[in-house]
Structures are given as C-alpha cells and as structure tokens.
Length: 210
Image 1 (cartoon, one colour):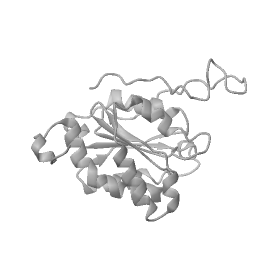
Image 2: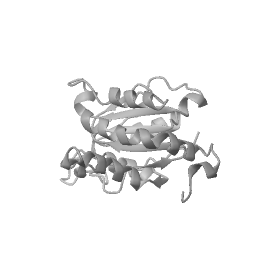
Image 3: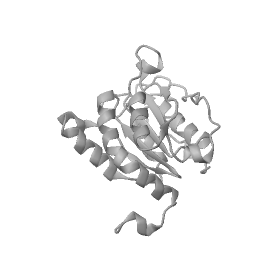
Image 4: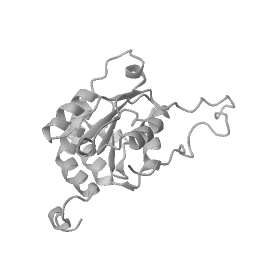
C-alpha cells in the first residue's frame, strides 16, 4: 500500500473557518463512502479500474448510472476489470472517495465521471489535484482533443489526470457519451502507463524520450 494520501481540501473550498462565503455554517465534512468489497489480491489490483461516479442524482437513486458500465466495457477490451462503482453526490465527497480507495484498495486506475464542468458544485478536479504526486497533462489533452472531434463543448471539461503512489487517476465528464469517448483514448494508454507506474518492465521497452 502507499502512504495515506493527503486529505486536506483545497484552500479555495467554499467553506472556510466553519462558515460559507455568506456567513452560513459550513456543511459537515463528507463521510467516507461505503466501498463494498475491499479484499483483493495484488494481482487483481494491478489490473483493476475503480469507477467513482460523481452524480447527486445517481447517488440518491433518482437516475440510473450509465457511465460505470461503459468503463467496465472498455476495461475488458484491454484485459482490465472494473470493480463495482462508488456513487457519490457532487462536491467534496470526491476527496473522501478517492482517499478511501487509495488506502483500502490501491487500484491500478481510478476513473471519476462527473463534476468536471462549471456549475458551483462541479469540484472533482479541485479535490483530485491536491492528492496527485505527478500530473499527466497529456492524458487530458488527448481526451479533450478526441472529444472535440465529436462535440466542441468537450473543451469545457476541466478534468485532470495524474499518479498517486501506484494509482493512475483520471477525471472524465459525467455523460455516458463523453465517458465512452474518453475511454476510447484511455484504452490506448492505460496498459503501458500502468506498467510504467508499477515499474514492471525494462526502461528500454518504454521507448525513447520517456
């Protein structure tokens, strides 16, 4: 396992000193989500994708999540498997979900879906970036570029990607269509990327310039 990740919310979180910007009491800190099964072997976690679905409507049962099945579909194409998703409301629950997955399971990959837009509760990048050891800007550049070939609004997604310990974390948008487009890019990158992060291949096999 890696060391326990940082769990301090970003400094620009809406609540400071126990009160919001309008003087109202801040919402209580998000509770750790129920991850379900956490007892996996090292061999299983080495090719595991853990979906985190950031959607208040899906988390409260108002709508059915349709993003996690897309992630599972593409995981299978590259010999990975997707564990059951963690469903959380929009907002600061992202930090608790990521932290618990990193500590309790340490999957090879965490893919979040949702919370990358511009509404007030779209905070997924803000709660992801502080726990990254290394950012990988090229991943999101590729995802957004691919998305723009189908929808110019793909440029508005603010998702980030990077590595924490031995886990790759990628923020995708919330719509199943955008998740599919993102996974079309990620399946070309994840096997090689996860091998690099785990340092399980000779450096010569990774090509020049890496």
